[in-house]
Picture (tube, rainbow, N blue to C red):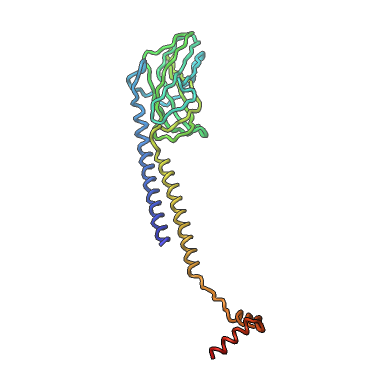
Length: 258
């Protein structure tokens, strides 16, 4: 009976694991769609309305241009997965010519292997955004990492693309670690699976202990009873009582019965 219960329990665990793997597979398929959906963030202020392809070309920074990055009201650099976040890219132009900001783009990488690209974030174009010589300006950048990204630390690389004297340049204004947090108010599928697996293991342990107790009780009931003889002890007792008043009274009783 106990072995049958174990088999049923293990079958339920395998079924639960297969369902979890199917959900994870669906999430990985949907992550591509979520990355494309991130590009639909509403443009604000001086942000351009037309999508542009800035290519994968890498340009050098212009001489005399310095950049800085600030996370407003978010000094801990905590980004909630699937929710919009903001950072400010500051540009200081110490060159001789005015520069025109074309776009800001960013990407997410693994901290332990920066060569692995996790997600290309939205490339945010700008219209008529210029920084004159010997001046500085700040540009907002809104982005959102995929809601399916696992919580943890990742590297964020932010790049500002600009033009000076009709030559393209780019500067990396941020290359550091951000913390991706899980959206509050909802339990993740992984946490639900781990809790369910923990409860299942506890139940399995309880069933095993119950089976062991039943086996011990059955062995105890089947143990043969050993009868201890009393004849030898009675004989030795009679020899010890010979010649006493007890032996005489016993012999008188026997004579009366005869």
